[in-house]
Length: 287
Image (cartoon, rainbow, N blue to C red; front, side, top):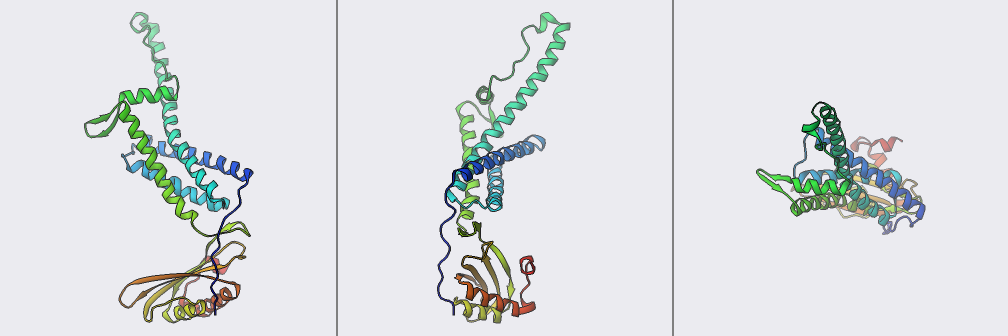
């Protein structure tokens, strides 16, 4: 029988080279998301209030989780700080791209004015538009012009700055809402890898009962269907996570998780292999 095994705790130790490398990745990541957001904003004219910064934050957080897994960034404070940096770069990057676009348009207009000034020097003298002096000057002019928020309503001055601040907060909150749960997943400090699903699928009631007995897990007396999930680090050097979820005859769903040592994990694998067609194998089963 399986004796209780503790879950893996901790993460990768802090290292300056890893920290700097991750900050660089997050900076590029934030800049890329900012560019994609502005493409959607400008080319598709899609930027609804509240929803757009939330959507941008979700995209930033989801892709950030993918980068954490891809790079095996196991130092949680570093990963979290990188998310904050990426969010800041995304927010500032969107305004900076808007600023560069405004400068380009001003230069084009100035060139048009110069050509017209040759034909009408007295009429257009001194009216050539000048590009913004910098990002802050551009934001001040944008705030003075106003930002449409609702039908017939425009936020000007400090109200425009307030709406931009709210957008930044929503984007950061959405990205952290994606990242924080992912960082709570187990991490193996021996092989420096996040735990991932190795096998999962449906099983019949009898197989679920055998697995529950093998792993010493609670299980309803009568169930209609069940699923399992086996978690492991890349090296298989830590305890394996095993989850069972089931639906009883009344339609209620329940689940349980336990951690298995190497011997119990092998017995669970043997039960799953012997179950045959009752549980579909994942690609990881065949690798």
